[in-house]
Length: 148
Image 1 (tube, helix red, strand yellow):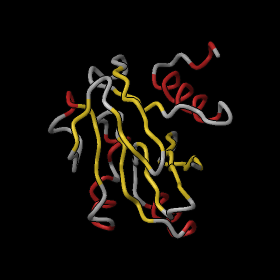
Image 2 (tube, rainbow, N blue to C red; image 1 turned 180 degrees about the vertical axis):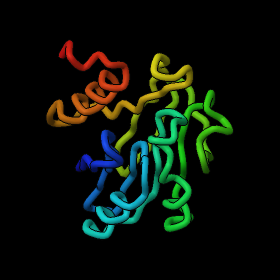
Image 3 (cartoon, rainbow, N blue to C red; image 1 turned 45 degrees about the horizontal axis):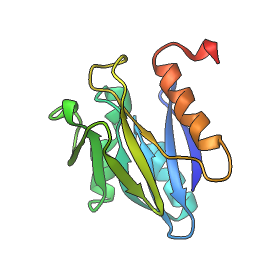
């Protein structure tokens, strides 16, 4: 799995997960659709999933446009955010598991930034890169990044 960090708005990032073997991608918290669509075009990949961590507009703003472009994709989010994440189809809670390509992530319930915040933990295979990105994202959302 390859991970791309895409700039969005003035101070956000969107994380795009890419499986080059299957030519598929998933996106975490698409604030806007344009950078995602550009990267997908460059990669020649089909978007199959949106993994939302919470309902704020700077994390879900691109959901509906991406669903228009890729109607088969599945939108995931926390059960506590039911009705607040545009296009949400799967309602997750702590301990649930989600699949992307040949990888499985555990859903973690991490309230703090919002009361319904979740994270997706894809265990590393050959290095700590995936784990570090998830930890960094978690800490930044809470203003705790300075401790690492």
